[in-house]
Image (cartoon, rainbow, N blue to C red):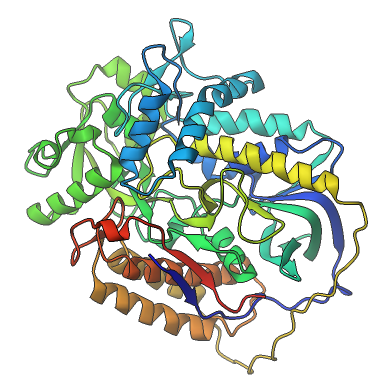
Length: 542
């Protein structure tokens, strides 16, 4: 795969004068308050000042939505080599084996660290209870509160970080852009309702903003997942990788007119069956692992079965499982289903795939080092090489812990080596005065159209004609949207989403094969010549 270079719009989304906005100075700036960002902050030397910026309340990160759990070898009958092999098999030839081996080897220690922080994992006979998920050859997924693992982990981590006097958390603060000077990241320009625009200077920046699921009409992601980190890094000149790989979760509760709710993979791990509208259990027709096949296989099988039956969804059936097990193991999902008059243990639950996890992101190594000096990245905003072309379930929280820890450690080391000689650098955010425009832009209308376009043309099944149409439409929207200077989060999010959507569609067009979560109906086979990564960058970012 070759490196793609896309034409850039403006370097910064807004104009700002360093003489007219407040300045804050930090040793380490962490952008993002999920598991990767907080784990990075925890590793920074307490003699350094760390600022954590999150666009919503810190408790509302995407990590807090994680249901299933965190994978790690805690059972004596399991082994690290098996976890690595499962991860590599799911990644369909694009995993970095050195990264995989390191991450899975550290898993048990990182989980024990969470326990030491106060995370209350579910127990069985006094030991952490483990379950099996699709693609795993052994039960190795630790979970908490039944099906609210992310919520419990984040509770413990947030309580820990709030006790650190050297860390300050800026909630409800939107990062508009990264600041660069002479090819190096030196901080960020942020906005919040209280102070307006503020420049945060930092010796090191760790980007941990999460994913891009809100690009798609059908998604498990909360409203905050608008690809902001991918976009600000691209505009700053960082290289991105694997942007064609968006993972679609197979089972999202499908109730017309309601928000989409994730039905954890652990439900199938405990033995639930997938039935079509005729009551046929179809997964054995597609894969010998049936419902325990990797997510890409199950999502694509569901999509094909929906086409065969001409029905808008399929159904999860748990009626053959013990009712007490279902109630104990999945209390949150049980409550969600009950809101719609569905009993999880008895009724057939309507589900269909939805955009779930962005595999592509900033090209980083195992320490989170990006191609832009001064900038590290961890978690869903990054592409570390762990997931390859398809993420193995419950490896995401694990990656956030391992790479987040490494990024925080390296940021701390580098910041300690830099003297406290902060000064305001000359930054140029000037751009031509926009043409007067009397017509207000309907941001929500464009965003809804974008979501539908991405779901239709850059979704689970892709084709050259659809991808070309998507790129043409995205370029058209970008031409007139990027010329505007917005003063609202909604406007900045739209500009970010349009840029990242174009990066994603362009990379998907370039990969003329089917591999992992990237399925091309015009190129249904996998080819050795594409067993490499596609790198994309904005060619004129400064």
